Image (tube, rainbow, N blue to C red; front, side, top):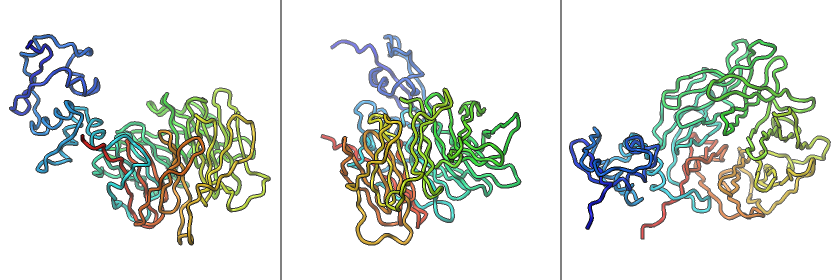
Length: 441
């Protein structure tokens, strides 16, 4: 038997570990091990005699090293999952721990993993999944941030300004939009630290070379580090603002055309393939619904739809909307969970409603919540009262339903970090749904 050329030795907290560069390469170049060795993982034979000292807990290192070797996670009962999480963060392989803990996200296989009682009085208003498997929950003027282990960080307090929306720029940075407090100049948007709750900077709106106070609403982000928000001020600052996520500087503003209500938009969604922003103002914020695609390159709206002038019934009022670029369509939902579809390839058109998705049976709850939509990895999700329906396929056939009756109706849900978070309205509680890991054969 020949001598293995890529042998590596570690001294972790006084305990010796021998492994190979092949095993360490499984951690990826963004890990601590990727930073320690050359980018090609081409270790020379001399590395086998070098001992690399790391001043960390050797027991957890052994668990993580075994994970890199086998792709499977085994944590002895006498060891802390929270401590494993911290060690994985240090080595930069938290994503490996998450993927080993549960399988790839699949709405039809999701199982309730845990329910968490909120940390603020009153009902929650919004929940947003973070990229690392955690989430943030808005309650009035407070936002509580939870990491992957669902440990809560110091809260973000907006000092009596009501939170309208929140979004993650990265695992450490959260943007929060809020209402202006009349006469104070407070409100708008800020970038906050997810771990400390401190505000790093504020996003300003300038009109005629003057900084204006404004209320920020719905948020959206693009891959080229642009931040979009619906805005309404006291003068002409009604429309959609654009900022640089990195510097916080305003780089553009689209003033709403007559007859539209872009400054009060409930939903923004960046469409990378179309290089446009979906803007939707929905009932009950306005009596009429407006949905359009906004192109900032020439300040135009190449596609739009409105129910102005159409006969409106409660069954046809749009409560949420989401664009599906692969099928060049927009999906909408009403309060009875009927799904409707519009073709983006047509300049204007009607909604093609489908009632096959309707799941309501019996009487409505005392305080029903408006349905919400989400699209994730080819599956369409729609919340309705205390359940979330999952649809799939070219005809969006109902394939499963997630339901947990405790906590009342679902007022908001969000998908990210291979988890689905559902926030209930009547009780200050949110649920975490995960895909079970595949069985070990």
